[in-house]
Length: 311
Image (cartoon, rainbow, N blue to C red):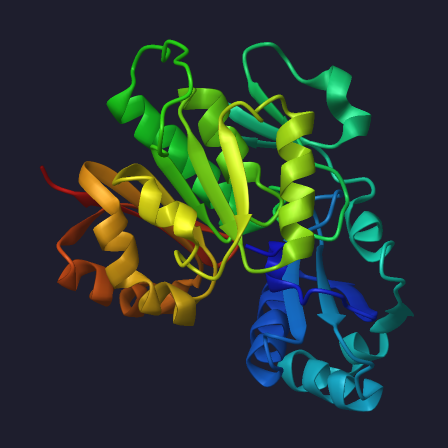
């Protein structure tokens, strides 16, 4: 998924810092007020752990006063006056959003930038993801929720370390909407199994491939450009033991049938990209396909769901 649901090439970011309750209210209202294909809203805890930030990425230059008015409605006039707008070049906006971010732990995994490469302990599976024109740095609740869900699945199904295995035809793991490839890399590094990852955005695919190489997972991870599970490679992989779909509610609902058919008996599906109030709507079509809910993780108002296909 694009981290924080950002559009592919934002031109402007609006930022403010406030309290956690106001940040959540502002993010909710702004998220409901703009087209998610062209605008992205993220609320997050600041490094001082006492305040929260709100970043709003716009693909096109917004009406500044209209955005301020929405902030005023969600919070108050004083908060609205603190909103600042910054123009972003095509290559600097993700870097700007990642500068100063600490490594993100998620169970046995930790996602970090190159500047923290030497700070990760040997007991963790370290995944290096740096600023690029794609998303999935681990800092957003959806990505971290998926990593925690993977960690729980591993604890339940693989209590002992998995022995390395060579390449096999087909993939044991699918990652739909891979973004930076972080989930595909995490699964490959932990399970040493073949992973097929896809994204609809060719730029994201290029970045994911580079991250796969950087994290020494190229022997296990293949990345293709595709919408959903439409690529020919998906028809060749056989049924998967693990499927990630970290995207949006609408596509998740439409993919229920294809994902269910791609999941083998005893397999798990991890769904994310969902606000807390969207979980039941996402679950319904998967339950109708014979999958049952076995885990739920809520982080920063976002929900990651783990489903299971019985044997």
